[in-house]
Every structure is written in C-alpha cells, then in structure tokens.
Length: 477
Image (cartoon, rainbow, N blue to C red; front, side, top):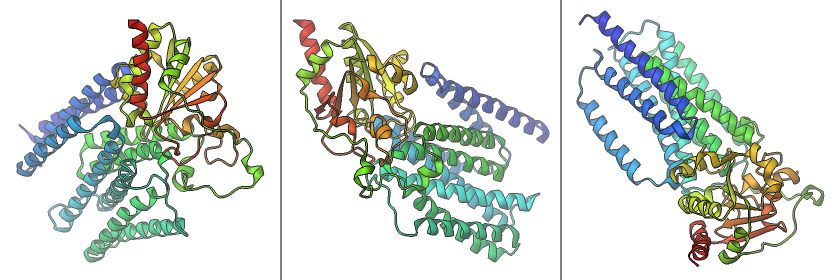
C-alpha cells in the first residue's frame, strides 16, 4: 500500500471517528439516548485507537500492548468496584490522568527534538505547543488530584487562603510565562532544558495552588473546568504529534467543558473569577446586626419516620429535591420506591434538580437514572419554582446550599444572589440530614429553622426505608 493511500485511509477513519464523537456527545444530552451516545463515542474512540496503531510511525508495539492491557484491567476494576457515591472524585482523577498523559506526550516530544531524532518543519509553532501541552497538562494533573482529595474528604472541603496568596499565584504565572518564552525563543539547548524543568515544576505547583482556595460547594464548577482543561491539553498534544483525531477530540472535550462551566456559574449567579478567587467556603467574618438581615431565628424541629408517613399519606403534590446526602447514603433506589408508593397513593411526584446539586455536574441525574426514575419526572429549577407554592410536601434529601433561603434574604451570606430551588414555599418541608452540622460548603441552611420545616435525622436510606415500610404496611393492611 502506497504511503499516500495509507494516509488517506487513516485520515478518513479519523473523520468517521470524529463524527461519531460529535453524535455521541449530542446524544449524551438526554437521559433516553445517553447510553447509546456513550456507546457510539466509545466505538469512535476504538476506531481512532486501532487506526493509530496501524500508522507507519509506530515502531514497536511492546509497551503499547502493556499499556492497553494495564489500562483495560484498571478500567474494568474501576467500573466494577467504584461506587456511585465516589463518582465525583473518580471523574476528577480521570481528568487528572488525562492532563498527566498530555504532559508526558509533550515532554517525550521535547526529548525527541533535543535528541535529534525529529526535526519539526515549523520549530517555533512546535515548541510553543509543547510548552502549552506541558503547562496545561501539569496544571490539570495536580489541580485534579487536589480536587480528588477534597471530594474524597482526604482534605478539608473548606477553601484554604493565606496572606498574599493571589500575589504568589500571580508571580508563579509570570515565571511560567517567562520560562516558556525562554524555551521557545532561546535556541540554546541548555537554556531550553532549564526552562522546561522550571515551567513543568511551576505548572504542577500552580495546579495545586489554584484549586486550594476553592471551597467544596464549588466543586461542580471545578470538575467541569478541569475537564475542559484536560481537553485543551489533549488538543495541544494532538498538534504536538500531528494527530488529527486527538485535536478534534480535545477540542470537543475542551469546548463542552467550557459550556458546562458557564452553565454551572450561571446557576450560582457568580462569575468564574469569583469561583476561582473568592475563597468561598471560608468562615464568614463577624458582621454587624444590620448585615444579618433575613436571618431566620428558630429551632430545628425533628420528625419521625411514622409522622413523615402521615404527612406524605395525605399529600397530593410532592416534590423530591435530591442532594449529596442521597448519593452518600446510596438512597436513590429507595427514593424511586418511595416515589412509586406516593403515586400509588394518588400523589403526583416530581424530582427537582438544581444544576449544581451534588459534587459534579449532572450528579443527581446520574444517580436517578441508575435507579430507573422516569426521565419525565425530572424537573429543572426554573420549571419547578413557579409550582412550588402548590406543593403539599417538599422532601429535601441532603441538599444544602441549593435550597438555602439565605441566597435570597441574607445579604451577608456568601451565596446571596444564587438561584435556588424555593423549597421553603411548599406547605411542608421535610429535610433528611445525618446530623445538625453544616453542609459540605460549611454554610448554615436557614431552611432548617423555618416554621414549615421538619428534620428527619439519620442516614437518608434508612430514614426513607422506614417511611416506605409504613406505606407497605398500609397497603398490606
């Protein structure tokens, strides 16, 4: 086969794979087609990998085979044993490894050029994309590792600030840019080697220090942003090695991540700069009495599973608002069962989903889909809020900031102005919570102290099973 024909076939296969990526990504937008979209995208990636392995540039398959086997085994283990409650940190870790892979590709290409085994046609462009690949890959890797540690609760979910932090980060950015310029324009191999070492280390440090001041409540934004960065790093790596499908795939991941990040920020009524640099989640400073306007004075009023059943048994309009508490207790299947019990009892049931509920984008949608909750019952925040005053009961399962009335009433609150699900407007609100502490972001929820709110304490799964048992007793009786 001539080299021209080989090149045409390879690029044609890459075009097919790219089309499958786009189609799969579009189908991921709806629950009904998400599984098929995931399969189509996977087949597209398989085609891309197989065609790349047939490329004439591959000299030895030994380590490629080792990597394929090791990656397959690790992937199967993760798919089999990683619980849905651990999916946010798993996504963060996968983003990080994507960034690390791009960093390694950029570094390998640098050493190939330095060793004289490859001579780029456009040296300045090639050196620039190598720099960007290592820089973005390094930031993505350590930033994702830090996000993983926060989500896994190996580190505190609160933001960590120190005096002069923004100045330090600014100096790191300037040094990174200067070392990058020195690498690209110097032409001296020894200067380039030192510059590569400097901006690689700085990129790894920057990833850590940039995520450090971001609080746990902003983790969905961080996850989508790091996902976007991993795509940009992969795109740069595609330019480095001249692989068209890697450029396309990286662009798709990067742009979709940017769009999702923008959606997350709008859902919190905050800019990306505010998320990254405001230090949301630190302990609030003492404020004057005037600043606490809108704070609800009251006490937490507990309710038992039996009394919760009595309230729900009489309800005809029920909305369930899931949060991370549903994920951590793996209560999604019991939630679906409760919804079915309520429907059999004559109630209309809806599931209200806030865009930033949980600890990663779409976290609640994934859990409810796993439990086979009908997609038609899922309602977005803007659609449920006008109906909330007509709801007999709102059941809040572990959600905190996304239903906190302080966002609308307390100007001193860090979340003031954030759009929320107006659970407090329902006739009765039942909040499921493990204890009396604050949520992951560290903020007190004013909803808990409102006169129409009752607290059902305990593990969400166990509490809901108690309510479901009451319904079953009613049905059998």
